[in-house]
Length: 288
Length: 139
Image (tube, rainbow over all chains, first blue to last red; front, side):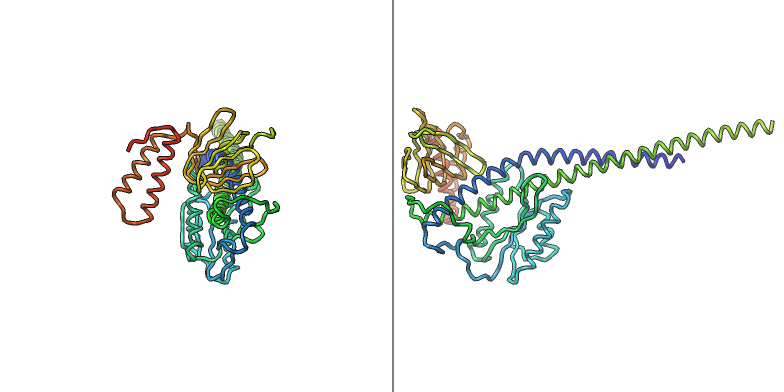
């Protein structure tokens, strides 16, 4: 009986430790999410405006002059897979990998993969993908600058002709509760995306439209990828926050059940001890 | 909105740096500095290394910029830049060190053209920041 009590006490202690850890992680993720969210908003705003300007310039250029607006014959496809560096975030990475594998399976051409985040790198190794680039996920402190560097590397794959299309598998951050995995084509820019509903105003261009487009388009593409990377980062923290809050609740429940069990076992022990004492006294009386 | 004013915004990937009405803006176009007043013709211009000045009443607000785009239409002027710093928030010490490093690299390695180009650009950026901050350039 005594060993049983001790075992339950030990279990309660373990559960309590887990509860403390998951609760701490939940709060850390909540704080991090709060820090990333404004950067997601800022990068979205920047991307929107830059795309807007690029579209206005493109409207004044003869079609198909810039390689980013042209579909060239596809010999190899590029896919950027954006995961987190760490686990313990529920189905965040799993959902993303399912989307990535679905996309890769849909291509007939050879696929070159750029893995961002330790989890994506692991998957790339396991699945024997042709990984042409890998990097850690952008961090919290200098996320948008790190993301910009990565965006440049990805764009260079296309510039150097290593890949003829670029798709990105990332996690969309619509709200902390709603963050579906998403697939988007980054390059070449689809014809519809580079159009503007604004009437072709007689803009003055400095320098001329073609040159301007050549500097604007790469930046617009980078800004878009930066935004996707930051959305993924925010989604990861939101996913971890949700997962850890569920884990904390489970630990609480388990602790309540174990405490109840402990009390019952202790009462049983006391009852049986009393019975033993009474039984012993009875036996003494009878023999006396 | 005051008809005689220009709505100015400076936007970076990190957020909006400036948003407000102004009387005029001077910006470093890649083909030379140009001024923007209210009712300017719709323009899209690429900006290079230099100083952006926003005039508000009698005051000039100054910013150091290394590259960007300016979009002018309907009495609004939007500057988009990956890096732009207000004159008063420039870290003079850091800019000095950056200039020193770039000079050192230019002195030592005149080998690979890419590195030289990068160092030249870094030097131009650092000197520009020092100039906008109003600090002396010791060489």
